[in-house]
Image (cartoon, rainbow, N blue to C red; front, side, top):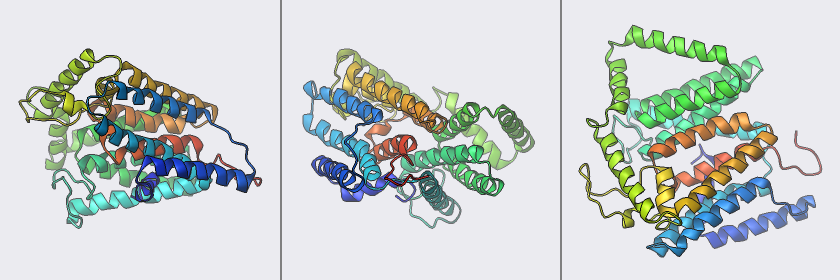
Length: 373
C-alpha cells in the first residue's frame, strides 16, 4: 500500500457517492484556502470523456449490477488522485522521495519472501513470488516503480543523488527479475529503453545491450541463467506453453463477442457472463486477458475511443507541462501490460494506473500564493 500512494484511498472511500462528495469538498477547500477560481484542467476533461463513453455500455449491458459495481471502482480510482492533489499540493521532490521509499519497501517485501520466505504467499509460489499481494499485483506494481525510478536516475544531474537513485533502481529491477513474470520483464525492458530513447541516451542503450549480451553469453550455462533463458523462450512457444495457448483462445473469444456487440459492448466487467465457451486449458476465464480486447468486447468501439482520447489528452498535457519524458516511459509499461492482462478488471490495480498517470502530470503544479518551488 505504501509503495503506491494512491492506494490509501481504498481505506477511506467505499462508494462513488462518498468520493464525489469528498471531491466537491476538496474543491471548496482549495477555493477557501487559496482563493482559487474553479478551473477544470484539460486532463480532467479527458478523464470525464473516458468515464462517459465507457458508461454508455450500460445501455446494452447484460448485467447492469456487475457493470455498476466495477464502474464505481473505476470512478473512485480516477477521482481519488484529483482529491489528493486538491487537498495536498505535492512538491515534486517529496513526491519522488515517497515514491522511491515506497518502491524500495515493496521490493524488499518480494526479496525477503524469495530468499527467506518471511511473507506468506497470496496466490504465488517460490517460483512466482508475490510479496503477499498476489502475483499480478506485485509483479506489475514493482515494474511501474522500477521504470519510474530508473527514469529519475537518468534525469538526475547531482552525482550523489544519481548514485543513490542507481542503487534504488537496481534493487527494484532485481525485484522484477525474481518475480519470474514474463510480461513484467518485457514491460520493464520496454519502459527502460523508452526512458533512454526519449531522454536521448543512445550511448547508454548501447552499453546496456552490450553488457547484457556479455553477461548472458558468459554465464549461459549456469543454472540460474538457464532458468531465465527457458522462461524467455517460452514467450514464443504458442502451442507448447499452456499460458500462451490459453490467452489465444480467450482473445479469439473476446473478439467474437466484440463482433456481435461492436458499438457499446456487453457492459463493463461482463466478459465472463457473455462468454459461453469452455476452454481446453481451463474451463472458465473471468477476463479477456487483455485491456484492449476487454474494453472492445465490454464497452465497444465507443468505450475504446474514450480510453484513447483520455490517453491522448494526458500525453498532450504532459508535453505542454514538460513531463512527457516521465509519463511516456511509465505509460509504455501500462500499454504493453495491457496486451496480456485485463488490468482494469483488477480492483486495486486501477487505482495504481490512474494515480500514476495523473500524478506524473500534476505533481508540484498546485500552488498557493507563495510559489512552491
